[in-house]
Figure (tube, rainbow, N blue to C red):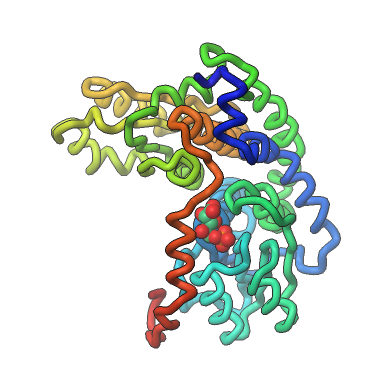
Length: 355
Ligand code: PA5
């Protein structure tokens, strides 16, 4: 079914498959677009990303890269309130592709009220308008995408700040983009299922609830797999982190009922890492009860491996959409909730905490 190009173009008429595949080009274009911007010096403090869904995920990837390469620390906030400890030495980056997401706008307004240093990223909407009236620098990303398919553009400003605070990342990035462009050729629709890992994984997940496990540095990648499966393939899916899950979830897997409803996917850590053996143990135990999809890390270099796994998961989600016969683009349920947010509920009066 996945090897039928007519089915693919019928089910994915807006060609999200191609848009997701353009991740390296989006990043390159995005980096070039902000190279000379005035805001590109990392703050002396931390970077706080506020955003939701397909916009916030750029922050998760930046968080992982900052931790790995020792660049500026990036934290992500997915609430309408910002943490009380964001200070004057920090930079708050509000990312909303549409520019109209209630939670993100609410957090941004709060940051303005506290006179924090801000940067915003999006394709227009109220976020861009407010930034312009308040003199906040705004990175415009190209319009016409669905938010999650503009990941490269949304990530580029964060990568710029990170690369300026870590020469190791700065050096690794060009090679990572080249490798990404090369490896995606192995996952394109023209490569038949038996030779195409992206199609093979989608086939293994059909009819199941995928649960994606990753090691801590790949938490953002595991979340991206989950959310892409949710939004593109329109299926329930969750993600979790190993080895932590070996201290709780494993009991449900091994001693719970009906595990065959679920499909575990293990994003494997590097073979020389301390937790590789733990993943192998978990894999062996899970296999006693259900088939397990194990996805090896494709490159030892962190940024390359991270981006490759992101792209692989994106394509898996579109192939699963094709298998399920659902258009990966529309997300009517999210639109309904956004409309309800716009229509009412007020801003709330709690000044405490993040809710
Ligand atoms: O990918 C999507 O469509 C969603 O996850 C959105 O990113 C999410 O609803 C937030 O919207 P926005 O990215 O426009 O702020």
